[in-house]
Amino acid sequence: MNNKSLKKVIFGTQPITIEQVVAIAQGEVEVALQADQDFRARIQRGAQFLDTLLDREGVIYGVTTGYGDSCVVPVPLHQVEALPKGLFTFHGCGMGKHFDAAETRMILAARLQSLCFGMSGVRFELLERLCAFLQHDILPLIPEEGSVGASGDLTPLSYVAATLSGKRQVLYQGEVCESAQVHQQLGWQPLVLRPKEALALMNGTAAMTGVACEVYSRAEYMLKLATRITALNMVALEGNVQHFDERLFLAKPHLGQMQVAAWLRDDLDVTETSADQELFCLNGLHRLQDRYSLRCAPHVLGVLADSLGWLRTFIETELNSANDNPIIDAEQERVLHGGHFYGGHIAFAMDSLKNLVANVADLLDRQLALLVDTRYNHGLPSNLSGASKEVAMINHGFKAVQIAASAWTAEALKNTMPASVFSRSTECHNQDKVSMGTIAARDARRSLELTEQVAAATLLAAKQGVWLRQQQGSLSINARLVQMLDEMSETYQPLLEDRALEYELRHCVEQIKQQHWSLYA
Ligand SMILES: N[C@@H](Cc1ccc(O)cc1)C(=O)O
Image 1: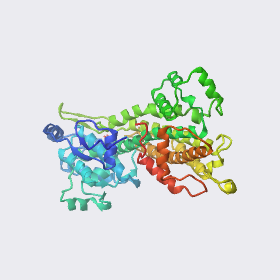
Image 2: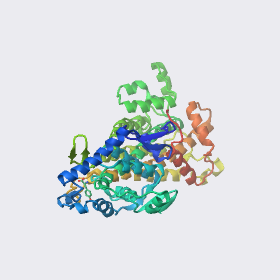
Image 3: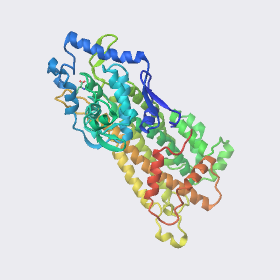
Image 4: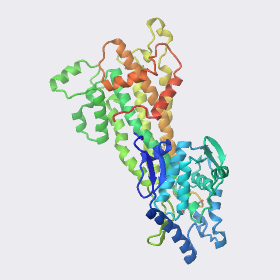
């Protein structure tokens, strides 16, 4: 993904993309609200309509009633102004660690874009202040735990509503500060939220959707990286490159799977062969058919590749929607009561994604198992150790790295238990079916973290494997692979005698997170 071309993200009537949200998270772009009068007027009409409705009819859910199951409790007019503050206050019970700065920016962006849909009945001033939080990088400290992801991310988002109101804490200029203090420093009055505004800020899926944007972008990169690692492992293990033959893949034409096979063909310089040539090629092979972690790599990675399209659709549709309740339609003068806070699409997307990426971890872990084992690695040294004969017996090369990768893989796989099937009735059975999408998104993020570690281990091992093969004699490798390995050699030396590899692994994980290598652009 290249965010450099994105200079400014405008929140308004146009949809925004996952890439734009990620660019905001990384602090790479300016943000602004759509400036035209029509947009401002459209937003203001929602807030005005709510005011007139209040005068005219006197009953609006969440404005003149209690929340959720308490919607049968009337709130007298003189208490209506106090209700929003009460909402964010009693939801101030989040637990666990805080979302990090990048994730918090994504959460703010997701909520702002939803409110820009213009069906939440909030004032333009609220959008401006939320946007100003992004512009000044004022980041509410939001605990990660405590959302069932169906009445929206009520508890996490209460921290957005509270900090806009000058309560609770924010991260500002690298320090944790009281929100009130930051308002004072900037000469701002904290917002006094209007009757529907706290609900509009909280009654949606912004926490899970923000995290989903991050996870999607990392998974998209992981697909390419895992393909490249597979190519390197094919070289190191001297696998049968004809497993990726174009004709073979035309016979089972899943598009993503075909794409992965095509990338592998490019990396491995696979050209179409005639029947004669095929016979000749087969003569030089260790095995007619490689083990599945090589032979079926396009089939494993292809499932992720083929899923990216629908995952993006789910995430971006949620991102650009009025995920709120009630929906305020000022044009038709209607208040529409529904369940648009329900995060079922993100829950399913994230439950699926964690399964997809854990399978990638498993694939790479199996390739690593082949690399280190002299029974399967076709003549490479035990554990890929580069030690000389004299000291070979006291060197163990990648042995512990492979054990660690087994642990990371097991943890990623363990994490694939779907969260959404753990729906449970809550809030006096008003929320009797919930999405658990925020848990699914956090799980998916963890699966990715672990998969990135497995990828780092496998990449360093693959590089060592190719290097060892080069030591055995001449090896012709595609120029793109050579370029990547040469560039990596500046940081990662061949493993001759054992050394502690933690810092190299950490550095490699960081490079993966930064999407350092541009792959298959
Ligand atoms: N999400 C609920 C509102 C709600 C808000 C706060 C709660 O604590 C509970 C429920 C609805 O729109 O129906």
